[in-house]
Image 1: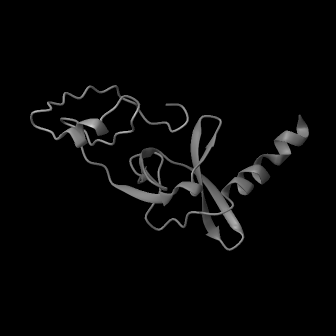
Image 2 (image 1 turned 180 degrees about the vertical axis):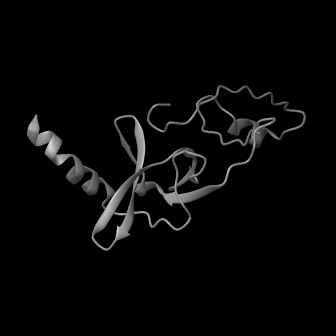
Image 3 (image 1 turned 180 degrees about the horizontal axis):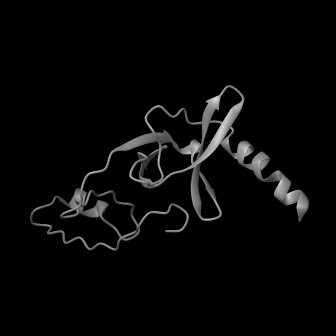
Length: 127
């Protein structure tokens, strides 16, 4: 999915009315949203951090957050999204040359879009 940058899956569910009450069987209809955890054999666990959804920006195909360097000074960091739950994104921790966040990073959670706009304003004025 280009918007969420996550993978979507097609699933099939076999429900037997003999084992599930009619009430629960009626809850499974085409088009309903379903959450599932699928273990991937041989996949190593990764360390991750959670950030509010408002902190994550999508710009030119990249996933970005802004981190406070010192009061009034911010830097942009590319992050790798691992998943989302409600209003929280799960992002990879940085390491081994991969993009991510360090546990000590102070992520901008409000106004990140304004920082992005201000950073790229000189490029827009030149066009």
